[in-house]
Length: 150
Image (cartoon, rainbow, N blue to C red; front, side, top):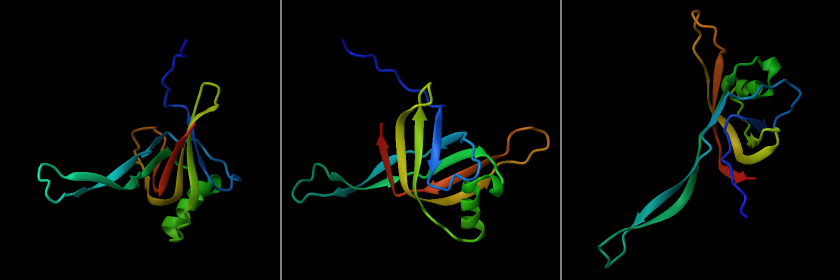
């Protein structure tokens, strides 16, 4: 008898950077940009005028967009990394950022590994005296390759 395959929920996940873990980190509110697209090129064949061949030429990824509550540089190695990039213009690519989907027991189900990751933008959400929301920072990261595995 075949096993039933259940679809996985998307709210229980973690994000691992290859940074020194001496500082306290928090989880991310959302992750988007785990995508891969094949760019194509159209080639016209001589003598065949009914159609054009469309062939894949290269892959294109992301960008990876992460959102979380803002932390001070003294609380977060990720914030220090971003501060170095945007304030001091010292861009140090991370070898790998891994997004892990977890099950009910917090065990890994699926992994997405982005390689050669560096920041494109760092945005802070709206400051609003009329609301008591968590201040959210948005990180937009470029990466060269995305690998998907169990």
